[in-house]
Length: 191
Image (cartoon, rainbow, N blue to C red; front, side):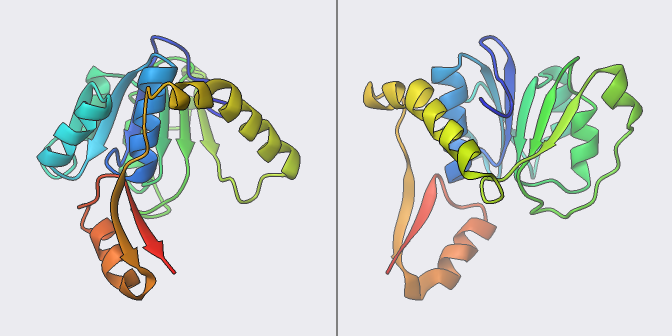
């Protein structure tokens, strides 16, 4: 909310809906902020899971055309931990004053973007990570979570999902689960 300023009735896109970040943001966008939710997933089964936690539209990255899906459901706010070549084409689908938040670049650090769209549509492309934020910014984020999210969590409007708990000695397999897109929620390593 602090970075994307999502508003009730807007459309929200999450790239990687079945992961821990995806599941949390789907629930927040839908149940706390009242947005329509579009999620990119790695399988039809993961798509059904995401619909179950609040996604309105799902796009299977192996079968469906993401640019077409987003053109039909233009996102006002997007959270993208994937990046890569497709990112620029997806940004082009955004409506006026859209906000694209890049958190990582799992599909690669480069994309092509028609920068004319930025000023024509008054778009914002935002890079964001918690690690580099100041203590004051982190405190502001925490206060927003306590104000906007905790009451919904307490009321059971949404819940965290843990796909699997594994010993740290199985970290290689845990990463393989993530890379194969098999997880629905977080994979937790124990020490």
